[in-house]
Image 1 (cartoon, chains in turn red, green):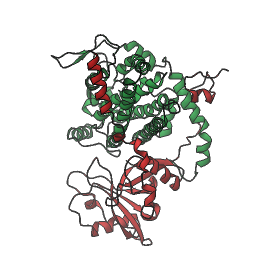
Image 2 (cartoon, chains in turn green, yellow):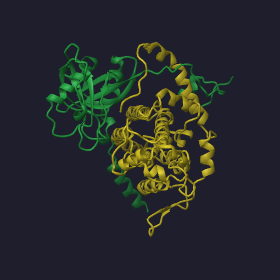
Image 3 (cartoon, rainbow over the protein chains, first blue to last red):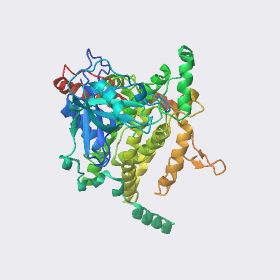
Image 4 (cartoon, rainbow over the protein chains, first blue to last red):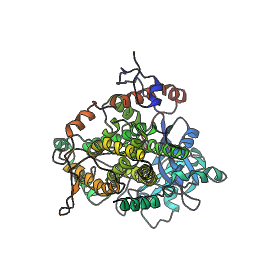
Length: 208
Length: 328
């Protein structure tokens, strides 16, 4: 069978049969799991949810998250966690805070552990890290937060994550977030052509 | 950024009769108030379906769009252009990742979307079914196809679905460099030798018809999309976006001394609208249905990448860690 002809030398090298069958049906989907990513834009800002990545494990999720979410914007830290490990509350509306709906859990058992809290303060925005506290389990963490947090604004939704489940790469690794000075070609300011354009237009006008 | 006008199904209003009228009214009131819809909110089936289709098409356009530009990385003139084009193409593939993630929150796994792309079931921006013969074609895409996509995506960023809007905000923030880079490349050709000028003029001649197709069929013949506008899925009509693009970029093309291959193209000073020769919508339909110069190649390349990368995914797969729909 002849190979697919292409103007693209890379495609020509792939040696793809010209009569390729396009329909693929897989017996089983082989896609990887999803991980939630939180990013800190600079050391003065809290960590914020920025999106997800697909990865085979936590370390690869971090590697990919760094490429995806810190490549083009400033960043001083990234946290990743398996989606399944994030416990979420319901959503509330208007002035009602979700904490008003949190009731005392029946299960109060568990070893005291650290939990991280992410709040949604405004619909349409993303969850922001507000801190951590110790509790026996996820439900107790929410219940304790309800007693201890003094909030002046309603919170519409909460994510609770056991701190141990988060892979946190932040302080102590600051140099990995530095952007190399020779990467200015990624910035719009590196493409000034105003003078060239002005000179060209003057030349054109003179020629008329 | 490569998203163009999306191809929507004709909304079947009958489907709405099965929806809970109270919930539907609450949903519409939320959109009316300017609030975003989030993945766990109640939404009509039709809204979910149309959004998945739209965001998925946009994501496909980003990865397929990387092919005609990516081919010029190794042949870009000079080290700096190579670095810049490589960075731009990497950004576009990153945009696909962000968009697939947004679509996934609606319940369709990414792998399913990739399969639908390869089988031809799901579409991508029609303009990428045309080849990039020369470096100037790649410059046309970087400057003007990106510019067209920005017109479209800035409108969509004000839409109603939270995860899509947030992905678009991120994407738009990365775009400033692409547009400036593309313009810089074209200015270099325009102010260069006669041969360089001719090369861009030829690219412009080739790409103008697909560029006019880019925003989708004329409002006169396109599907009535009132409900999609009301739900803020579609934010501006195809003709309105085309007009905005012409208004912003025709003067910039003319100031470089190039000729746009449409004798009827002019701005009607009274109406403020651009007049142009009606694009060939039969060709548009023919190409979108598979009969364009590069359709087969684009999908064959994707399929080959999918097949030849399968062993990597299999090797990495952890049987204890199953796919979970992302949260937001």
